[in-house]
Every structure is written in structure tokens, then in C-alpha cells.
Length: 228
Image (cartoon, rainbow, N blue to C red; front, side, top):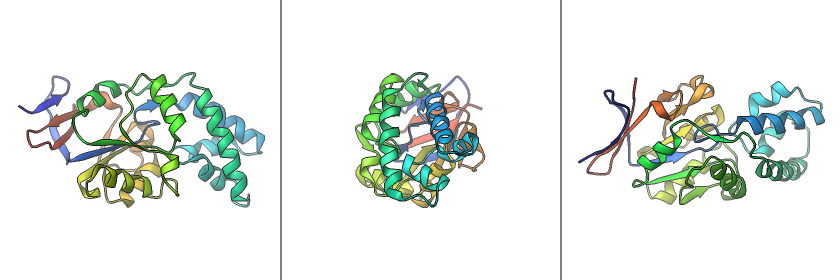
């Protein structure tokens, strides 16, 4: 029998996939409190409007955000500053919680191919998933895995290759414009999570993971729909 995880409402299938690629921050884990706290401090220290910084920080690696905000700054300084920021973010998990429905969603897809594709490094990914009480996928494409940050598609392409699937057979879950752009550039369909994603027209959008339905067919296909 197919395996279904849903609320007691009709499930309209919207997307079908053989593998799923999952962003972390804003998609599985709500880390906005610490991201805003630390990046506001960084922006003030560098004479940048904190609100302007927060408009570009989501979805990118820190050095890429810094390059966007300080285009004349030598990149080696951005990488050095990013190492400091990563250490601070890893040590600060105050306010880090799971996105509603993330635990049930990960349980529903445990038997099918999936991977984490995040701009966080391995230590930060482990810290935030742990703080949210979520299992960490076996395959993880983290900051150490790629040469280019989202919106470059490298991370998603490596995730698909690591799972052994063509990008067209994968669906990517994202919350940010940079992440959705990366997934599209990789040739994947997208599920957008939360208010940031809504502005970028993902193939399927939900407010959080409680609105998503997951059905695993006997052939192993993953059918994704909404509870609305």
C-alpha cells in the first residue's frame, strides 16, 4: 500500500519526484532569530543598514552576502570574516526551532532518497538540526562541499549526483530567492516554504510543512501535494 502522511483532507498531487533535496534554514529549521541577531550586529559594525543586510543574507553563504554588501572589499577578508561568523552562529542556537511539520515530514521521507543541501558548514548544520531536534540526512552537501554559494546550482547538482538521480527527477525544498534560483538553475522543480519563498513563484508553495502531503507509491515515487 502507498505510504501517506497528510491531514484528513483530500490530497491533490502537484509534483512527483524520485528524490528530494532539502535546504535547512527557513525550510526545516527556523533560525531567523539568531541570523537576524548576528547579522544586524555585523552590519552595524561595518556601517551597513541592517535591514539592507537582511534582505540579501538568506540562502547564501556568509562570504557571498558580504561580497554583495561590500563589493569593493577583498574577497579574502570576506572569507576570513565568514569563518568568524560561522563560529558565532554555531555557538548561538538561542531561538533555533524546527519549522512546523518538519519532524513529521522527515519521518515520512525517511525511506526515500533525500539529501540536505545547505549554505551552512557541517558544524553549523549539525548544531542547528540538533537544536531543532531533527534527524540529519545521511547525505549532506554543506559549505565545505562546494566552490560556489547559492544562487549557483553546484550544491543541488552535487546533491542529485550523490543520490544517483538526474536533476529533472528531483524536487528541491527552499525558502529563499537565492536557493530557489539555484534549484531552478540546476534543472529542478521547487517547493517553496514560508513567506520569503512566495515572492519567487516556486512550483508549489506552502506556509510551512504542516500544509504538505507526502505519498510514497509502491514504485517508490514521491508524490507531493497540499492539504488546502
